[in-house]
Length: 345
Image (cartoon, rainbow, N blue to C red; front, side):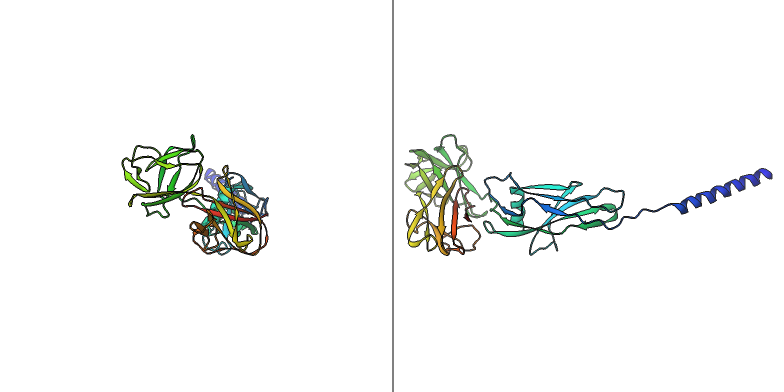
């Protein structure tokens, strides 16, 4: 009986001690996080497709604390001014890092996806969100505005190739259609550097598939024919229609003309930059309008209907709204993806 009493007393004391310890336990609850302080090394970004892997800007932020023993993770959010983080901003998770480097290509991709126009200065909004997932708590930095001038993303339209003896050692040139559904009409600009250039149109960069040769000057034949000739070095507009079996090879020299360049009666020649594969001109422009044209007349000319840096054949005049010294570039190197820029110096 005495033994049972001692056991019962011991058990009761153990229960009381356990409850006392549980009562003294302090429960740790996460609090609202401290707001990260965000900075950027560059906020004005004139992007160039010549250096896509270069650093555009580096974002850095201070650590956020939630007074909780759990890892804090971070993400960078990017949006347009119109979007303003209300629907689907671009979100880049960076784990526990306190910095993120963006390349020219990355910022350009986000700018295009968020609706900024090629060659036109626009704005991207950037912020950092700190969070601890288990507690579903977050803290958001203030917003930084990036002033971004993007270039267009290349679209690979249906293409045919120029296979033959020209530009020894260079990449096989191609010409393209202007839409994904057009597999008949092709055009492109090719810089031919030798004095005697011969080629055929092929469906792949070799002579192993569909081959179109010359039947007579300006006409094609599938499966044979003679080589197509471009008798001198130069910058050529090359067209082909694989249904009508026609082609043309036209040498071009480009210039700018208009009230902005001086007069609609006198053009200013541009120079071809063979390294960067663009036509360029540095000139003082007045407030006014201009166009690009080839060979001293308007049979081949570019304007711009949208003001988006994408030239259109026979398009409206290009507006110059601010006078100053400009570097003017016309890029016809990528078929189906022509662009131009007017960059104030």
